[in-house]
Length: 455
Image 1 (tube, one colour):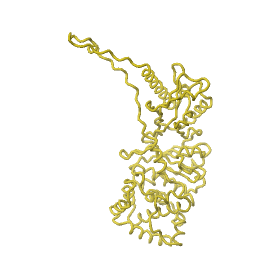
Image 2 (cartoon, one colour):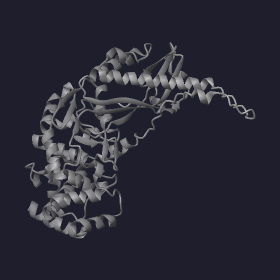
Image 3 (tube, one colour):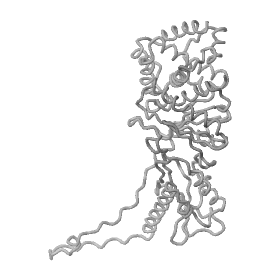
């Protein structure tokens, strides 16, 4: 089953998404304080020097304050309209002279959000990071003024997200008379300000709620959505049986309908045609154990062909990544990360090692057991080398669980995944601390286990 090795590789998406986070929130300038009357009275000391006159406020400063205030209020009204389902208020924030296609698209986005359970939806602007030289963006019916501050959308799914996640929005604002409007979310793309696209940008969103999560899909993949929703709660419980309950135990699963939507969900670095599912996150705060924007994203074209048992393995594998993400530092050994996720995925699946690891079984017949753990480079390869990397990593964790117990495997993951990219000597030190053995002994015992398991 060639999907085994090719549907994962989640860390790249998590790292790339983390780079998008961290914009500073710029608050509105505070209003001038009201000065008490007694403080405003002139001094009674005849020798006192009069206070210097207050400097005049530059007109450009006043204009800037007004612009920030107006656009901030505009985005607040837009966010309120989304959450209160007020179409008139939502459309009232849009430039009436904007491209009709933009206006129609925005109305469709509003309609597509109707069934999405939102706990939070708000915008933030950074007025200190604004683009200039914008006049060329409008030909006919130009506005009185254009403004392009950096904008972020923060949103959270109700009942799933512990914290909101933030994504960039390439918004361009236009002033006509005294009123500010949103006039485009595409005009700044060539200037490096691209708008993040959510599922609601690609079609009407159907949401299947389960006890522990949601499955967000579209009408064209309803059959797969039903299958995933039917497996989701059991998969979350299965992961918690191994990992423990000290994670949110809430999962959002996304089922994009097109390749373009899938690419928007997982990032451009993925060869999306080769994956069945992937776990992604926008930002991880290891100190607070908060993972923002954690999602399991399926490729319906591939996942729809999975058998019931294979779909179960894939879902549990990806949920394991989400459960362990706050304990996982980028750069940790891939054999540990992927091997552990596969261990949880295949646990109690009824799939035999020969079925799950055919490439490894073939290698055993030809050249005997591996002499080393798979490298990170093996997981970045393609074809049979990638499949073999996953199969060797999984059987390593299977061996460790039988030799040292499942609790020790979990402890090893927490310890080793938490140190990130370190020299082999540090890895060997963790192995000795947790398992009271060394790498050479593990590889030797693993080889014996493979010969016995595969006969």
